[in-house]
Image (cartoon, rainbow, N blue to C red):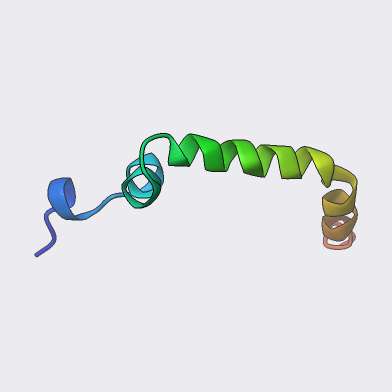
Length: 52
């Protein structure tokens, strides 16, 4: 059986376990920066799926 309190980590607990304290927040900040920078390109890519 899986002990959810001791054996399963997700989101911030997972990333901070792998990379140390604040890794999850750093990762979120990186994704946000890239998302802002590539917003037009990302929007253009997904716009072709909205034509249905």
